[in-house]
Image (cartoon, rainbow, N blue to C red):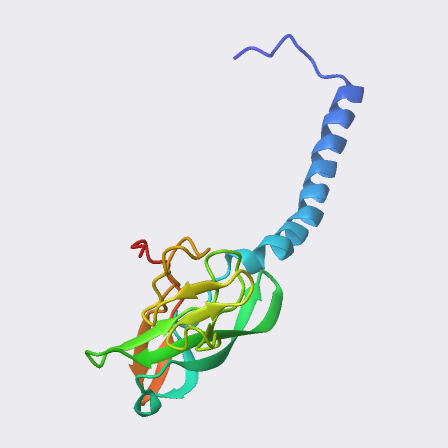
Length: 171
């Protein structure tokens, strides 16, 4: 074996060594900070997709009822309690229907039978939008799509709601 003809000077050796040690120390300091910043985003969340409401299944009637429910929302490392609302009723086939109260026009909140002229419809006071009892938008009014619908589950006699899903069928 022959020795390499390119020799490293003492100055180059010291420069390489100090750069390597400095890089190792910088990585050692930065890794915990990076881990701290992204760990909440990457951590697995416990719990399911359905949220318990205070509404008992036995108390649901054919008349839409407003149901407020609260759940804990986690945004990375910030946790807050969020309250949402749903309009819940039983249809003619005795199926439970849960509708989002958010108008599809501008996001205002709709109310059941809140307009004297249309007591059997959902009404949006912002721009006089209307929806039929099943959440379908009434033609000729501002809403461009039906109300979103919540998937439902029954557990221990209580109503559980999932995340509201949009419907694509228009009136």
